[in-house]
Image 1 (cartoon, rainbow, N blue to C red):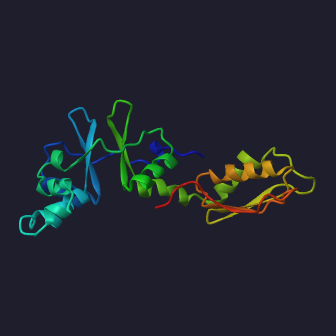
Image 2: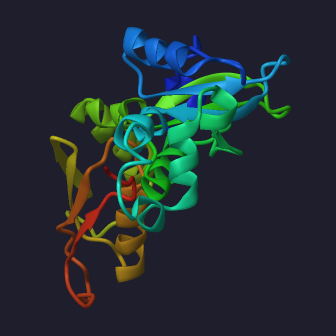
Image 3: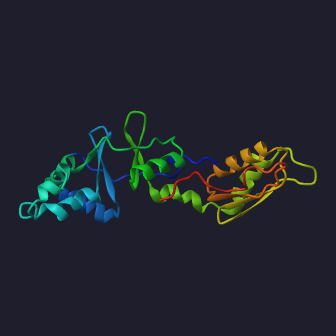
Length: 229
């Protein structure tokens, strides 16, 4: 399985235009229990994102900014601008990070992790909004059943792999943790199988319990490549 963003994203997205008022944006976030809203133009192209942190700047700094000594010297200039903002155009982060419907869930997760964002607008080739994907959406791959993970590894990785006589490959999966057994013909073969198993979606970690003909530097437990928040 190689889940794509289009498989997990939300298609019905709450949006605002650039002229939306601060109060209306705050009401939308509260009503729909979301942490951010895409800002779109008349052709539904994403031109920015307003997050709850953008709105919080007004509460944190806006009311008392003129009465707090040294505030302008402490805060970066754009934080004060956010505090003074009254429309989506003034509040939004322009050129926001986005995902494509055909990106893998793993790719979207990496962007969220590295950029420390909770959700990504999903746009088509023309920049038009197609959906939105959240941390919860991408982490849903970890709810995959252990039996499904085991079946994919057996059919897609272990099947057809040559092994030492009387030492066939096998595995167990518990709570997403894969343990692999058997005797590969070469260390390289075994290490390749372990690497492939790491990238099966839903895998949390891979425990290498293969019986190598010549032991590599050390058996290892390999964390899955999918980043966690």
